[in-house]
Image (cartoon, rainbow, N blue to C red; front, side, top):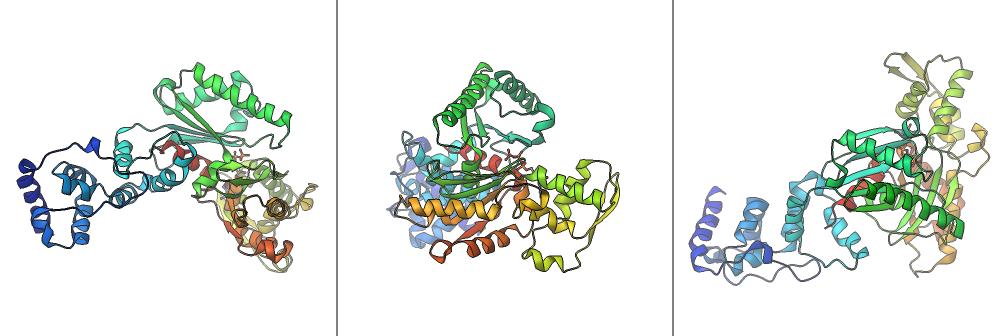
Length: 446
Ligand SMILES: Nc1ncnc2c1ncn2[C@@H]1O[C@H](COP(=O)(O)OP(=O)(O)OP(=O)(O)O)[C@@H](O)[C@H]1O
């Protein structure tokens, strides 16, 4: 292998003087994701099959591949191949593995941006500084950099800012100023990609006005802080992008409520209707606390109940069958001691499907999703009856083990086979940080 690489460089050095040089900047492939035509002559490398030369270039890496492009037209043609740079994007940087999806699927939503070659896209990734990413969840906000693998910080929104969803200019100024100071970055230095909370879902004039008001308050607060560019997208659409899809139904199990959001080609289908269930992560924690108090399990803080919920609870595949089983499990909570839960482990999550057991009078999660699918099917505007059959879960509570299988099972039980055939429930790829990852993906689009 060392010999082969040596040969590449000898060939490069010999030919650099004889070939007309060109700069990497000028290399732009035709629109689309293309394969370059076979190069005319690669000198000594002509004796090797082109696939082998291609493999060698993969091995030399992106930096040296870019250098090869200035040797002559033949090498430039070879190393401009989109497949090579897609390979580099996906293999050389853990945090860039979604760039290919973003560039091929999300870029088309901004028709004014001309398509670039993947070689150019790669170079932009190296040169352009990242964006600040903020997911202002109603329970927990997450912030960080688009170039980083995960959020650099998370904090409880409700305890610090009471409720950031009410469009108050000063509340937003305070919220963003806190984040910029924690990130130790000047607001004017970076663009920001922001996830908007899912509120006022309806397709009515007053709901539209209230969404506009929320956006305006956010934009005004940010531009008054001299932020150079703002991109704000709703949480559900970002969760869908994080699952590398642009159409489907997003089920965001939020802090206070659960939203079932149909999205087609990146657009929330408000005409179909967004279903809202008044159960979220907080309700489950409170219900576990009540059960523990009832069963004389002593603890000091609500955070203990939350930890036990996150570490020991699950969703039963069949609630009635589970009730007849012995299901104890124990966990040590630092500062509080050991706790053992039994039936509480699955009765807590069952509130999502049977809210009445926690005294909440609303439909179950499966019923809300089935209703949404039924509406999507009835409207049927695309001629494609499959786009709504992928259900993408998001939010921390969606991490409860067993949720995917149970939701699929309930949907098959509720819907006629014409609708339920082909349904797939997708677990949240990034749990509570799902919207943050969707925003990061947008922050990385050229
Ligand atoms: N592994 C887990 N299992 C169960 N629940 C979890 C887990 N991880 C986090 N949660 C719960 O998820 C909830 C927080 O979720 P998340 O951060 O998605 O809310 P949010 O983004 O603030 O809400 P919203 O979508 O309403 O803005 C909390 O109730 C937390 O206890």
